[in-house]
Length: 287
Image (cartoon, rainbow, N blue to C red; front, side):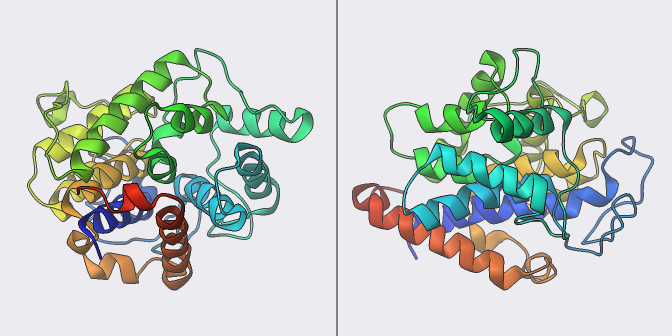
């Protein structure tokens, strides 16, 4: 396994682990929930420990399309989003759940009109960055962020969101090259952290957790225990920290408790295998 492989795996699995750890305490105020130290059941969605939500499902939809099509096909990714929404494709339950309003409206537009650009400028939720890992990998080594922006615009067509996507992409690029980001969170203390579901605050909250901890697990628990939109804050943290520390830094116990771990592992391995095949020079690059 190359260093870049390890960082890509860490980024993708970090997303999934954060989503699963954070979902049981999402929607709760910062200090009004049980302290999370491992996988817990989610009472709100009535799911056992290790079940993922929309964050991971949409990332899986992107990855599955790339594997099946053996390449990037935006329209097919959009159809996968519709399959998830309507049929529970790549959901941890037989149906889709935890669907944000902007994402739901966008998927309806994809289904009914075939539109691949959806949303308005005020749609500045964190839907694009919570699922960013596979889109980032597809775009890795490209001269611009076209793929990142196109996948983001499927649900969140906003210049401001694209700015946040670019910022997160720059952080991930640094980490994939083994350089710890110089980006600093605007939040100086835990009390200052806004744990809402806006793209800006979610990235800043995840950066706060990364900046103030020096290993994957400690930062992940700091992110999860912020409450609020905990699953997405933790999913974003997991991508940032996973890209820096690598897959091997993620606690095995957390991974083993994720539903259908082996199925997800196969999808991620197939996704990276296809990417390496289509990008031999990028796969052999520095990491």
